[in-house]
Image (cartoon, rainbow, N blue to C red; front, side):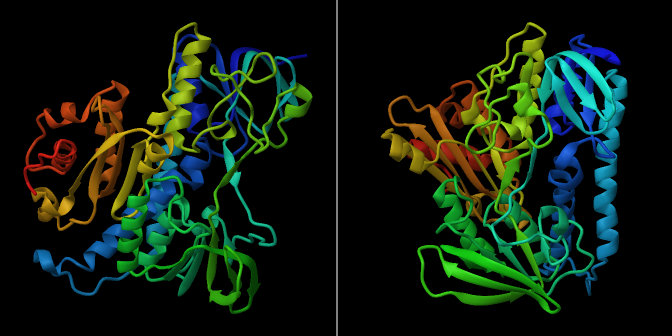
Length: 463
């Protein structure tokens, strides 16, 4: 017999799950959220986005403090207190997870503590208890992807979770994977003193992003002291008393070489977390990559069961999951919702930051779309000079006939914030001319976006 009945039960309290739960409750639906962890927030808040950004911010300040003489700031010897930095990181995580717990109470969302699974149609089992619901939403997120023959022990061979908990700065660190996770965590430990080597299977960093951003990022990261082995693959990694022994081969085949590192970070992506949910018995279909198959309304192949976030197709990004949670909640309440998946921004929180939205040049060429390009460097911006942060550029891609913005790509200071203007303009079908004709405050970094828009028409002012 069911213990209690709900309109909606969500399995998973990450960004997609908790946002969906709160919005469902706001819309008058009796809502519960299942979470097996000790805290709410899922991977993102506990061992992902939030703790990594705390360490990125702290390590960036540490690194910056060592190079302020040019601006007339003399500090003297800079010391690192890693234990205190980790305590700061943990306090940020705690504040955020407690914040979600408060929001659940405020909005009358019940937290069902334990591991959830689908017992049968309309029923969710949590521990020994069973609850009924008109709608069941799977928002269980993703887990660390691994490589064959490489065992993650979270001591010497670590995932992103282990890389956030290191007790001391390693002398050397090898990163398997040149994507967002590897580059961000590599940046943290490089700033704190580790010698970092990135091993990437592709011939460029950040697969999927505009290649001009990738090329510029590689140049800047090398200048910062990071080392790279592109078009390479790790075929073995074995721990020993003195560290980890790696075998690295060319991606296209060839002679192998040996590397040694104190710590190896496996950052080859993530995989949907769909284990122990009872999906097969419930009749929920998965695709070849283990993702839950859904229609445009997030419905699975099983009646009354929906899925959002990392467990379905699309970029594995917290803000994508949040938007899906919001839209699904409103659909369940009888409202309309919409997401343009071409307009989900991607951000890499290195220094400089890297951000992208819309089509890349490579995609436009592949699709045969005629386009115009406008690019403007931060070096020519007064505010960037005043900040002593002049690396990078803003690039805008616009339709050659209509001038509609098709993509915006940024590498430079505060790129993750600046990209929002591109997302907003593209959401409303705006043009490069719309950006160019919009007044931007001076002196600000946002002026680089305006100048890039002016450059689309060949009329930038400050270069």
